[in-house]
Length: 544
Image (cartoon, helix red, strand yellow):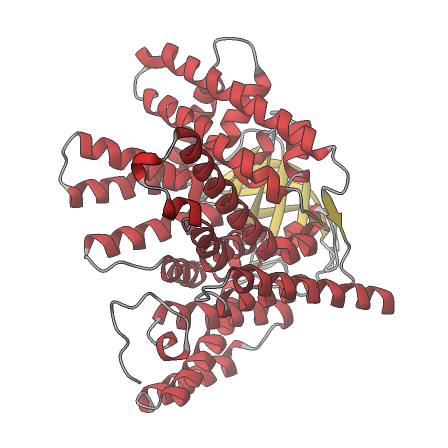
């Protein structure tokens, strides 16, 4: 296979796909992890097949088709085996005693909104009780523990049905097969790490700092804390319902919007301080990593940080890394570290939306940004302020609509499969709320920067107040838009596998059109794929 021209734009055509190692790694890994999550496999034979396929790929490395096929088989089988080895048991479980005392390693824990206890996820570490390594959903009273603590907890134990819906379906997507309710901590078997305790303390301190306003406004403080910490549980109930109905709840998840904004602000400060570029870049990545960890290291935040790291690494080494390559690398790294993330709703929606934006939304926006005939024929000195404003508004609105439409198309099958509803209105509401959300985000960043000294508490509270006022405005806009008829598509899928199937179909449509220079193909082909998937869903519903 001839080596492609390094000056040619990154492509997914057959002659260049073999030179995209991240895609060759990420896609088979994702397929393998998904296969094991769907059907379950015996890891031994699959590992053997993966090793043989990898050896065949090495031997036949000069034969592109054979080597590529062997790499796909190796990545898929090894990914499936790795997922099986890392995942807790998923087989149905029978609970013999409703009240139990279990040793549990806490993976994730957050205090309840009412302050009466905490919820979380953990692993059962008891080897003799029949529940070893099973992931369990926790609801307990008392102080919220730090992640990594091993506790002896007593409470009521119930299984989670394989065909559960609602909140239990989300718990199943996290690998949990058991629930423990009314828990009471009997003792600490092993303390958490110092870093975990520090993270928990910093999160509590930041939440308290961000809630401090010059006037009494608990809801405004909760909105700002949810924005900066990525905790949608902090949102007032009416605000959360409105943002969910309009497809804009993603604004309160730590994602590329947060990471990119913080990175841009820190880079600007580093340039103003005339700091060396390489040490400053490493320090900024370190600060962003701490922020990701303190806010809970959600799949979307980890994805955004890994992409930022690869993009910066390519720039520092003077080898620009395409955005699609960075996304594939982030996906591969995440699956290698935590293969069970493939079933996580945040992982699926985050990667699907960003793939849609990179492969179709961004290129379509660039096509819309091309000068019109009026712009080309009007000399610069003859252009009026009204004309320039009109041209910029057109580019902003059309570009934003392309990006929003691509993200919505990419996430619709998964959203319907996970939650039973998807917001078409979000395509347009995002045009207003996404740009507005950057202002409270920047104000919140400035407030967090003031947190280095208690002397800055007063100006920080006013920054919080301004951010809270803007978030109230955003909430009002979301609530008004949520009242519009047909803003949501409600559709219960007859089979659970239809959601992932639709997501894979849309991903394939976006990838095959990624290098198109036609606006109708960039967004039209994925839209047609979504329409075909919806038709299949309606047919299966009619047959069932």
